[in-house]
Image 1 (tube, one colour):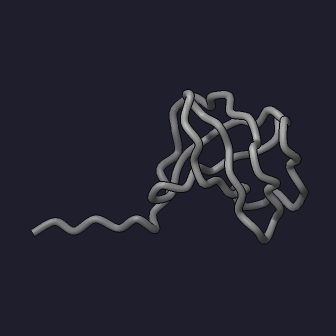
Image 2: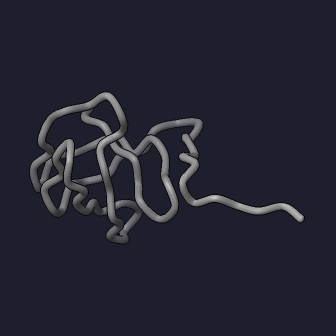
Length: 72
């Protein structure tokens, strides 16, 4: 029987545009608007900055239902 883990990140083949709705920091997730829906989001590993509401970000993947983002 195959099991699935939500802890394994899935990286998209092509980054897409999202807009920060709630501030995202290196140690605190936030929220982004992506494809007309709001999603929990966190910075992709290796980035240690703050993303502010209204800022466009690259959505590069997901981990469970949390989107993985980085700045443009």
